[in-house]
Length: 139
Image (cartoon, rainbow, N blue to C red):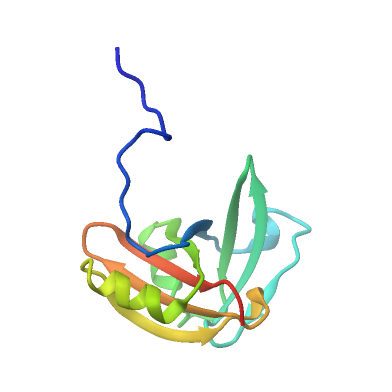
């Protein structure tokens, strides 16, 4: 019986050369009640507070709405917890050009992110694959 082997499985190049998995983003009502004691970062540009935790080898970003009009409030209302997957990329502009050629739409242009030391992030969406955050590796 065949088994899945990540080393020999098919590969899908969505984000370009040097892209690497960074974290999974999950929206929560309140970070403190979800996982007490985590360091929170408030990002006024994104209107969210975030905190990171290692969950058995995968980094999870807990995202708490910063206000009732936060972009993640609707996800909570609709019951969606897993909201995005983030990939780090060596060149954000090149990655954006790459994803556009693969059917992604840029839904939020690059902005500095508090939680990542002001490194630039951008948001892209694909009808079949969902929402992704792209994080530039260096400033």
